[in-house]
Image 1 (tube, rainbow, N blue to C red):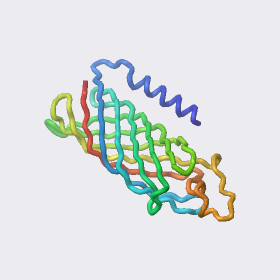
Image 2: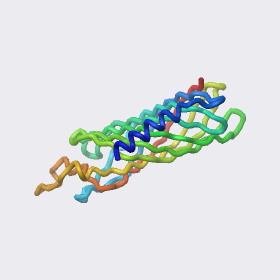
Image 3: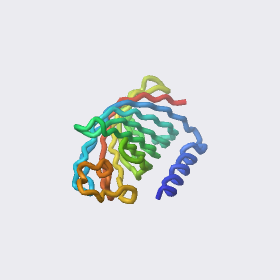
Image 4: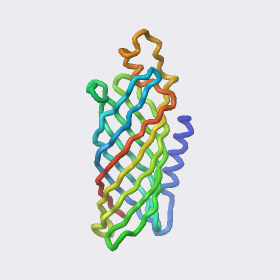
Length: 200
């Protein structure tokens, strides 16, 4: 599966930056808050990720009424009530959105994304999982090149590391590895961000 995902990302990068008539390059950055839903391990332990601050970067091409390209997001946080159990989330996604004019200096957009999420717990090995999501927002045009935006994103990751970790211990609640032992559970995260973009 990892080879398939790597092939998808490579093909997406080549597609995103292939020549398109009248296309413009968009470089953007954003900062905001990520809200995570609770998960449950195979050992019925409740996993609650503390809401944290994320940083996003994107490189896209703008075509008439749409845009597409690559998106990267990073968040460092920890488990609720366990500050020593730290987590790093790194999304790398191909995304595409349609643009909708809302006014003279205002526009909206709505799109979808697909790719991977690399999750690194400090008590276990990092792993890369399939991820997808939807996003939308509004942009205020400061000039033809510069825009500020407010956006929201729903990101979901299929967390499945059943093959990497075993939990065959008498007291599973005290085994750190069992804190990240899933079999196809979904990690849903929601982002709200304020961003800035520049078009070349």
